[in-house]
Image 1 (cartoon, rainbow, N blue to C red):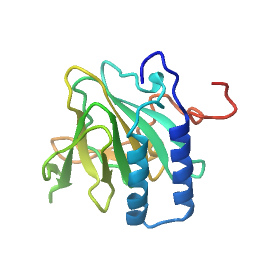
Image 2 (cartoon, rainbow, N blue to C red):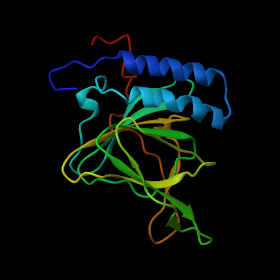
Image 3 (spheres, rainbow, N blue to C red):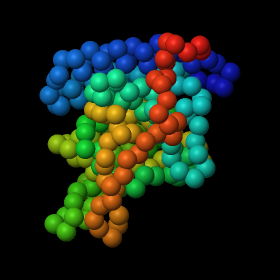
Length: 201
């Protein structure tokens, strides 16, 4: 999407509706991930719907903008915006999640905890390019570190979680071992849902 084009809300609205229908079926995690994955792949397969202000990088750290929080807390949708070379610490989620690449490229390195509780890299890093989707969960592997693969431009990914992730108590895993609790919140605070029909667009 160019800076002069208005965002098209339809793809996100349709994605939210489809996820709501899935949540109402109370599917077990494997089935939820299996059915939600192609929906997210469809959302990130075109790039005409995300407002520019929700894809704006910060010069210091990555940002996460709330796009939609299910009113019953069953899922949330977030845009992650990575400035050049930015990365997360090693962290967990405690709930299922799907990561869909919208712009640029990022790398996800999985970790496991050793007997002393220190996070160690596990397996090869996974590269995500536009249209691709990766899953995380406590059963699949929940600890990872993500970074923007580009040193000269912004990358944007769309994340879906099985809870209001900005309010979930989670952990980061310092290199020296142990864990530190955190609650991420959102870069845009606790705002109404992006496509709140009570607002004028």
